[in-house]
Image (cartoon, rainbow, N blue to C red):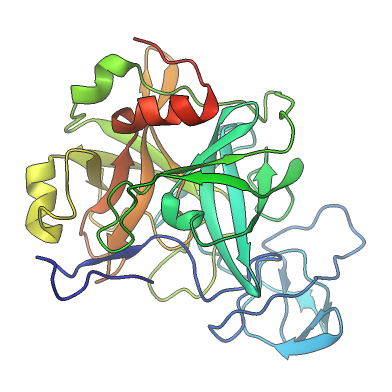
Length: 327
C-alpha cells in the first residue's frame, strides 16, 4: 500500500488495490505474496460459500498452510464449511449480468500479483487505474461472471497504456487502459459501459447516487478479497469537502470523492481499485469514476473514497483507444 509522504498536506490515503496477496486462485497466505499454479477441482462449478481449506492447500509442487481461501483451490482435508467472504464494504451480492461491463484484473510482475477491477469500454479495451497497470507486465482479465474464480471468459493481455502524468504518490491522473489481444464477443453477460459525453466535463455530480462494484475486501480486518461480485450505492460529495480530509494536492478537479449513501461504513476497499463508479440516467448507465484510493485509517471509518473523474480523461481515453465520444 502506498500512502502520502511527509511533504503532502495530508497522509490519509492508500491504494484501493490488493497487494501482498496471491490472487490467481483467490488465496492469501499469511499476508505475503505466493504465486503458483493452482490445481482446480474436477467440478465445473463450486459453491463459494461451502468450501474452506482448513489445513493444507496444494500449489504445483508446493504445500502451504493457510487459514484463508476463496474458490478453485484443491485442498487436502477440505470440508464443507461456512465462510464469510470479503466484499465491497457492506455491499450487496450482484446478480449474473447485472454489471456486464465489470472485469476482474490479476496483474502480475515476477512473483507478485495484484487484484484490481476494471471496466469494458470497447470490444478490445479495459479502463482501470494506473496503479493497477504501471508496474505490471501481464494481466489476466475475467469477464461476465459474479464469481471471481469462475469467469465466463478469460483473456491474457500484456499491452497497457498508463497516463503519462500519473503521480504514484498523490495518485493524480490515476488512469490506464489495457488492450485485449482480440475483441470480446458481447452478450447479455458481457457488454461495455458507456462513457459520459464531453459536456459532462464540468459536471460535479454532487449528491448524486453512484453505484460501485468490485471483488474487494469485506472489512479492514479481512485478509481476503471477495469470491463474489459486490456492489454498493454511494453519495458523491464536493471536492471542497473531500479536500478537508486529503488536502488539495491530492484532490484536484480531475478527482471525485464519495461516501456511504445510507451508512458511513459503506465503501470500497482493497481489491476494488480500477473498478467502475456508475450512475443511471434515463435507463442508461454511465461510468463517471474509476476507483483510486481509500483512507489509510481504514475502509469503514467513514472517510471518503477517491475516484478518477472519467469525464476529465475522455479525450485521452479516446486518443489511446479510438473510442468514439459523444458531445
